[in-house]
Amino acid sequence: MKCLAILAAAGTLLLTGCATTIRSDVTVFHQWPAQLQEKSYVFGTPAPAEDTLEYRSYQDLVAAQLDRLGFARAGSPAAAKLRVDMSFSTTDRPTRHLQAMDPYWAMSPYWGPYGWPYRGFYPSRYRYRHYGFRPYYDPWMYGPTEFREVVVHNYERKLNVQIADMSGTKLYDVTVHNTSRKQSTPLVMPLLVQSAFKEFPGESGKAKRVELELQPQQ
Image 1 (cartoon, rainbow, N blue to C red):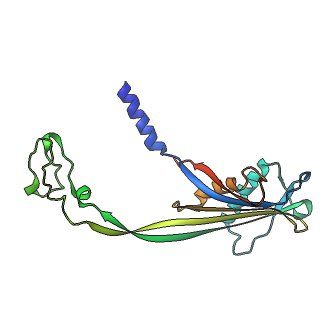
Image 2: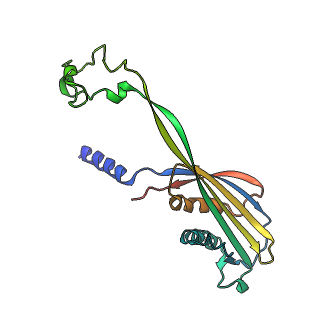
Image 3: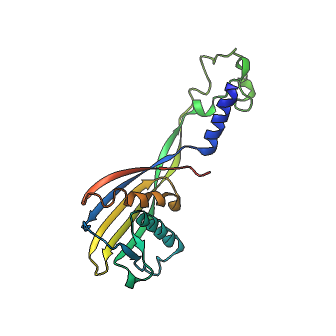
């Protein structure tokens, strides 16, 4: 029964995976009124080229955070006291590295029962029996080190959210910077939006590091 429990736990871990920490650098500047009674808002109209379905989905993420903080989305600019503007960008920064390929680890076979090498790794002339011990001289151990070029993609993301009154006076301006190897911006953006409003309005003019857990997808 104990073995079955261990196997079940291992299977659950493989299905759920491990959470990934998303680290963002957040900088806030604000002149937030201490007593702001009316928190109705509308989103500013983006440029036609930016008015995409992706952009609108991120607007909904910002709206969810504002609703959590007691803001209310107005039906029209005439009924709103505040205007919210948002912008984002994603830039791929690929870098090339030379990775050493150790011939010992790359080519050494798996040693099966009684010291027999696993078939398929060594040529037939190297299939010898050694009773569980690797010979002192391994023909693959002293082979030349090989290198291969590996391209690593780092995705730099920037999110900016501004809140101003209808006269244009800025009240809140937050910028979130994040660099990760996660290619999918829609996967990471919810955490960037959460980081933008963490401890709202926060201390003005101070950069902080926000770490949130990205839960694995099923």
